[in-house]
Length: 170
Image (cartoon, rainbow, N blue to C red; front, side, top):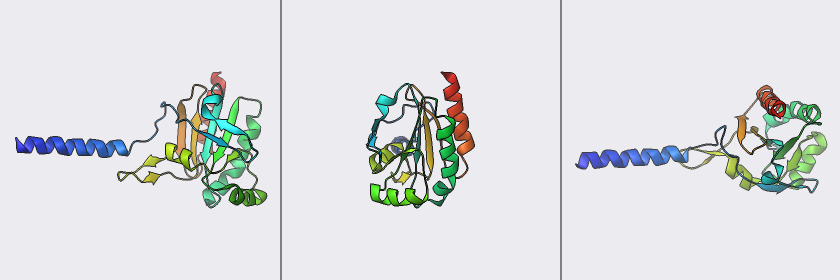
């Protein structure tokens, strides 16, 4: 009986640990958020329904993010006539980002001070610590569901394919 109880307790502990490592899955509802861009526009995910929403989480210190900027900027040109909203969320403040943008143009709508949103979208390790690579990409469909997620270097072709698929779906 004691052994059975121990096995049940161990199973419950492992299940809790596995749950704490859960991540947002493709097909799941995107966590809601709101934030104000550098230009002063307030974005609320719930108000963007009907649009494809492309999120990138980035940092001015991220070398990979800097290398991906030209490819990401091309997306805003390519999808300019479509209902696609491009948001770049950063945990950094306006001053830090403004200096960076003078040397590195980024045509997404930049939303600074987005730590709370990062918390909503980041994975967690088994100890509950944040685990999010930069850049991280999420594509949210017209109904508010995550249809693509990736992070790291050279993920833009898969990102482009996901956007294109959703735009064509209309």
